[in-house]
Image 1 (spheres, rainbow, N blue to C red):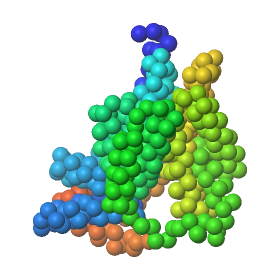
Image 2 (cartoon, helix red, strand yellow):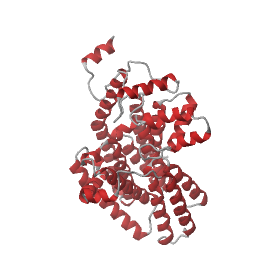
Image 3 (cartoon, rainbow, N blue to C red):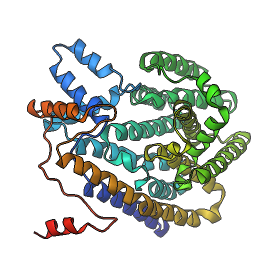
Image 4 (cartoon, rainbow, N blue to C red):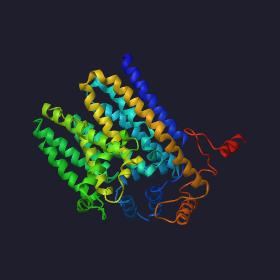
Length: 432
C-alpha cells in the first residue's frame, strides 16, 4: 500500500476512534424525548399485543408524522437480543451507521485512486460532535443516520447499474421510506438519476425508470403520513424570502459556526458550487451518484424549510440535528471537486482536519452540557418530555421497569467533564 494511502487511512481511523471514545465516554442508558414514544411505548405495545395484526398496527403507527417502521425493527431485534431495551446499544448501532457512511462516500467517489482520500475527508467531516444531540438520542439518531446511510447506498447501487444492484437499490429505497418522512425523497432523487441516465447518457433505462416511479408512488402512498399543520400556501403567507433564507442557513449551518448571517452566506456559496459542478458535469456527461445525493440533500433542506420556517426563527436552522444536511453537503462537494483540482488534495485534508478539530472545540462543550443535564434529570428520577407532564412520564417509565422491558442504570450516575473543568463539589465526590 502506498505511504500516501496508508497515512490517509490512519487519519480516518483516528477520527473514527476519537468519535467512538466520545460516544463511550458520555454513554447513558436513559430514554430521551421521542425515545419514550417511538421506542419504549412501541416495545410495550408490541410485546403486549394479543396477535400479529395488533403487532403490525404498532409497527406501522406514525411518530410525529414519520413512519419509523424500519428503525422499529432494529429496536425489536436489539430488545430480543439482550432481553431489555438498552438505549446505549440502540444509539451505538445508529452511530455505526453514521461512521459507515464515510465508506459509502468513498465508494461513490468512483475512481479507485481517490478512495483513500475520499474516506479520509468524509470521516473527518462526519466524525465530529457537530450533530451532538443525535449521538445519544437513539430515536432521532436512528432517523437521521440510517436515512443518510441508506440513501447514499441507494445512489451507489444505482451508479453500479447492474440488474442486481438496481434490485438492491429498490429494496433499500423501500427501507429508507420507513425510516422517516425525508426518506420518501429518495424516490425523487433516484427517478432523476435514472431519467438523466436514460435521456442524457443514452443508456436504456426506460423500464427501470418506469418501475422506479410506479414503486415510488405506491410506497409513498403507504408510508406518507400527512402533516396537518404544514402546507405550501403557509410558506407564501409567511414569506417566501424568509423560507429561502432559512433554506440557505440549513445548507451553510456547519461553516456558519452558530452565526445565522454567516450560515446564510455559506449556504449561498455552497448552493452556487453545487449548481456550477452539476452544470459542468451535466454538459460533460459525467453525472453520477454523488450529484444525486446532493439533489436529495437540497430537497431535504427545502422540505425542512417548508416545515419549520413558518413558526421558528432563523437560528433554529442552525440547531445540532439539522446540521446533518450541511455536513453531508460538504462531503459531497469535496468529493465532486477534488478529482478536478489535484493540487488541492492535501490542503483539503488539512481543512477537513481543522474543521473536525474546530467542531470538537465549539460543540464538544455543548455536548457535555447536554449530557450532564440529562444525568441530573435522571439522578432526580425525572424523565422530562416536551408538552407532557414530567410526573406522568415518570410513572410511564416506572411501568416499563416493572414489566421488565427497561432496566435503568444505578443512581447516581456520574457527570463527565472532558471539555470543561469539573465543579469543586464534583471533584470532592470523585476523590472520596
